[in-house]
Length: 183
Image (tube, rainbow, N blue to C red):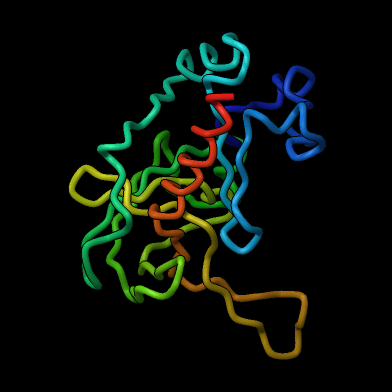
């Protein structure tokens, strides 16, 4: 969603800062627990102009058949497509084009964890980007691995590993939103 908005849209999209503020405004939104950091926006419950604008900008809703619960195995090759705002290109990567494609492999996958690690360089602003394996969505970029720098507690070194939320949790949010949409 961040990528769907530009600075010129700010006045028209200030509603986004209050997504979780009250029951009447929350119908089109479904949020995960804070540790997963996921959110869905129902295009069925938003005004038609909102959905039309996303589609006009090239966003295509994904069908449930194209969503897997997660990657197939450790070592699986993944592709991430990350749409970045041009203003972020100067600080996130020196090789930015729209869209950005990145390749990596699943590094750590455990059935009891809601996420997995992928040896894929990601940057600030990549959160929410999809990870694809064999044409199916298998994860959502959540964070980059970092380590504290000795002697400088407020600064962390970035490591080229991405924390990826398994899409099985996205499916659960879809189910919650479907119930809300039927009200």
